[in-house]
Image (cartoon, rainbow, N blue to C red; front, top):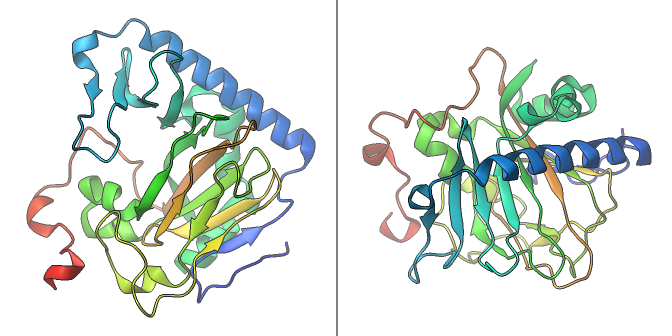
Length: 265
């Protein structure tokens, strides 16, 4: 398999990992899984939906746990005139076509390589839909910050395999990475690149490409300003022998061990 990027940069890009037929199968699986989750969401009690206020980084966005499937949550875009799913997490358990890819060596091999372990196991999954003209931006952040709530310090021992289901470019919100940023430890969300950081790299690539990066990699993406979707399916891997992520079990004493903001260090 041909890779772009390097271990020292902290990420790998594998163009053409999945062919056209495989991408179509994954798209169909995602469509089925999202439709299933949305159908369940209709039955939700409105009071059980978290609405982010003006001071939040996603004002007007809503977060909803799926009735009958408490392991799954939907993050809705802010425009209520046309309800649109932004993220769904986890997702692979909702369709066998998605679940079947966990053991694919084209995913597990590079994930193990970046983690420096002989074998990996599933941690969790999600879909970022970033719909045409609707998909909102993702600020500079590390996946570590979210995962730390449940895993504590071991949150850094995980790698995301981002499977592009559509061609991605700067118009429809392609992923932008900060090479080498994984070596600097945790950072506050929405912190811009620091002096001395490498130049950001935007991954413009065709559907079927997979981007691998660790949870400490700082990344972001612009809103989708195009008439094309930019869907991405994420498989997050961890060293073998560990259990799946359970978002109902916060990490004990997570507050006392939370990352220290850079400006306080």
